[in-house]
Length: 348
Image (cartoon, rainbow, N blue to C red; front, top):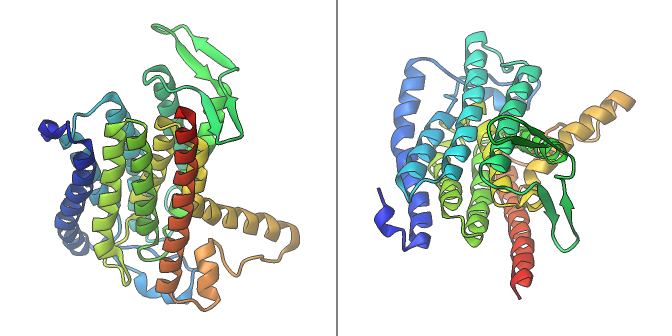
């Protein structure tokens, strides 16, 4: 629709942010009204902070509106490429997985939806399909660059399946990226525990990923990342404390998968771990807590994930959220600086 502006790529990226904000802010109130009339609300975990009990029944599955906004903007702004459709496919499929999980929570009226095994199987299936498509049809190289240190060739152990022109399966790269994508998917999901926390931090991260894609001359992935950032900004209007709606697993799982997919497309696999460092810290806090408790029957953190630890220490919810936004911004800026410095040195 806006292909006429293709000679102004920077304008298109910023337009994607604004358009996604508008679509999200227009549709979210309608979605909230529909959810309330249908009595579809969040089920709060029984062992969570006592202050969260008042959130019981708050409309959830706001990720549906965010995904609608991202799809509409990514397809209407610029000229969609194969990368656009593959990124949207993986993100929407993961969102649908989260939607099933959210719906099952509502039906069963408990905070647990699909079994962990079912969710992981679905995530690994989507991640595997994405990696194979990226390598075989999008020309993504199965190497991982650790800036200023080494470039790891994860394609040395590759099997070619004689289907069509042959499907290459780079086993080491496939395993590594499955861990990164599924890990990031669940890390963002774990971060989505306070009003505005996940939406705000994903917004920051996606702005940086859009900049990386743009720097790599990948306009459509940049528009895709910008659309997600815009959808997060629009959603924050309703998700800020006290939240009128939650994104649910529909949103958090999809956003985490989108980040992992963008890392592959833009070849920023390692740097994405720094850019999304807050999500990594949240996930690690849960893993450390579980392992340490099983061995010692004691807890390192007052409560995991990490944001709940600071709540237990007496920080208000808004203080935790704003400070985590700041940390996320610092990590995202650091990751981008490392990426930019290496690419700059490569052309000098």
